[in-house]
Length: 273
Image (cartoon, rainbow, N blue to C red; front, side, top):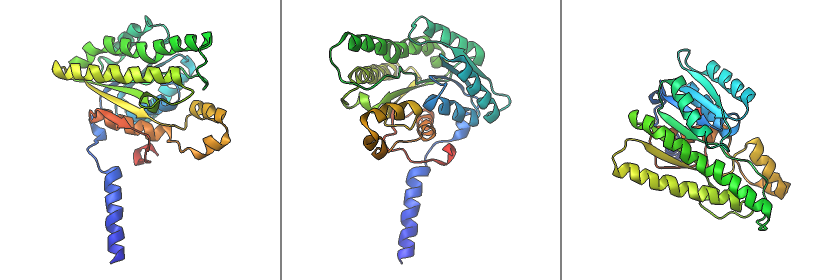
């Protein structure tokens, strides 16, 4: 009897985690632009889209890393798919239009826009210093305004393709986490803007979905480095999700046109191995 009960429970768990409406084949031939894709989550997102048969353009500041990502995408992807990159610094808002235009030209259109880039910075208290104010201004430009600019330039193309926007936000955009006040403010603003824009698109019958992703601690090199500033006790006890697992959860949410995705507790998935 107990064996039957255990078998049923295992079946329920497997069904909960792995059986869903996600069809990887639905991404074949999709034209995808991923920002902040030279490393970390963005890099893994690009690889998974390539594995699922999509054409992918990646953008970031570092050309050499982008070239390596594109080379890996070609190894993983469909031989007929298109893979390319655009070098751009999102601190320069005028570059956002160029990024969209270049990506659309390479891909022949745009189906999915993944907004993933941020400015990494050290953790620290808000002391009302000039440095605090300067950092806040930089973060507002890159972590918020560039997202809005990219979206504005991409919307005509996404409307034409019934496309999707995937926005990488953070737990810091839901909860006031100490020592990241400037960063947290940009994520709260990001959530507010895209939630409002989503409702406007629904009201106007614009066929573009917006998926907001609440990301917790992820085991990227940058994240773990900054976490260690609080001491090994914190960094050793906090559980982090892998970039590949987070990437898969994000891609699935976007493909299903889900309103929100949370990776605060992110299970390992077979595609991410």
